[in-house]
Length: 315
Image: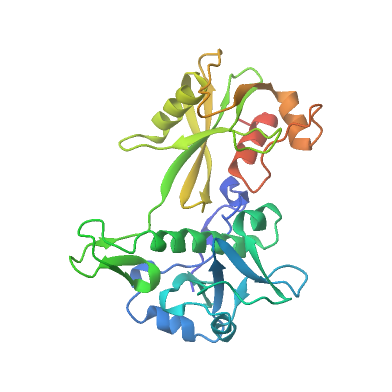
């Protein structure tokens, strides 16, 4: 069984972010009508189970375990008819994901845990965390595409969850990924820009970010979003790293952007605050030692690595 991770540099920055450790071989081009049944019959198949945006975990071990064998998944009322084949590990063992029909029965050794909480608390190894991120992305996409956008008739799953096909007009659709730029904007003189959205926790600051629009390059999106959110103009833009972000299905494209203006005039509809931070202040925030208890994202988020690159003067 092939393993894509062996082809990536060991210290690739993108691989340090949350949900990026997925080592599965997806084998999408060779899937057929029998792939799902064959995967479910594999004696070592592992199945992830979700309900209402959370993941069912066994809690009787040292850490929560979200994987279930097929008999246990059936006992938990997993809807295996609509499950998705995520891929195969290097040993050829399949991983799948399925929704639970109704809320799971109460049990002392089972708990539903949100994916964001799993990532923030680092419950799982990076490989399993990445597989859960892939599962959340795919199951969410399937749930939103049960009807054809062209003719309105029902769609059916094909290739073990790799695509959907309209049962009437035959139109085929593939899982969607939405690109989002997230940027560390700096002035080249030891300062960077961070902002606060209204829903952020108290004292929490992060990078500016926004969706790439139709017909737009990544660089153009960085410049547009920075101007719209902060009022700053940007010159050079450099890609740094990326992160799969399954809330609900984005790819965060991390960039370093050099500001060509200095006066901030932020969009109060998007942000509740936006300002320049000196490098020593950012270093204190990363260390949890800021004099006003200001904080930045944890290391599972790509924003953390963008901010750290600035704090380390490694741009």
